[in-house]
Each structure stands twice: as C-alpha cells, then as structure tokens.
Length: 112
Image 1 (cartoon, helix red, strand yellow):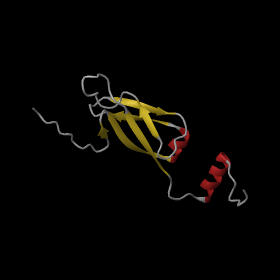
Image 2 (image 1 turned 60 degrees about the vertical axis):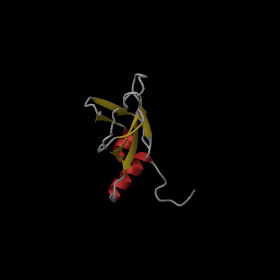
Image 3 (image 1 turned 120 degrees about the horizontal axis):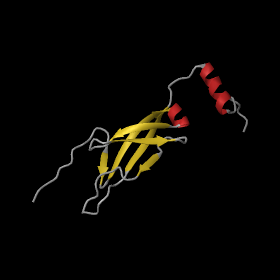
Image 4 (image 1 turned 180 degrees about the horizontal axis):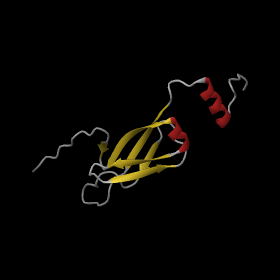
C-alpha cells in the first residue's frame, strides 16, 4: 500500500479530475477581450483567448486542461477559470465623460 498526498498550490486547486483557478482581469480587458498564457501544473503552457465581454465571477470551462483522469479512464479533466474583474477605485471627470460618450448611458439622469 502507498499513500498519495496532495500539496497545496499557490493558484490552482483540485477537485477530482478538475482544476480551478481565479484570475483577476482589468475592466478594459473584461470589456474588450484578452488572451492569457497559463502554465499548467506539469509545466506546459497554453493560451486562453476571450473575445467577448466578461462579467464579474464568470466561469469559463477549458476542456482537457485539468488533471489526468483517475482509474485508468484516460484523458484529462477540465480547467475552470473564474474571472474577478478589477474596477478602478476612482475616475476623473474627463474619464467619466469619455466612458459615457463611448458606452452611452443616462448621464446621471434620474428618469427611468
């Protein structure tokens, strides 16, 4: 008999065959899309492309980028990435005006 112990990782956590990670992204990337290179636990690198708007706490599933399946089933589990959108703490009046011009909005109006 032998015992396998699992070490904690700084970024990833495991649940069965799946890996989970939380990634903080700036608001501009959440709105415009981005690509990010990940380094897997085994050292290989892969890129995840996001082309759409990403909402806070959105979870993206990346098939086959988890851990090797147990029990001789072959293949790999999945990687689940939770996105944490980093909003700016403050904006200048000019920044607010520019954002309103680009995205539209009510401009502070209380009308519904």
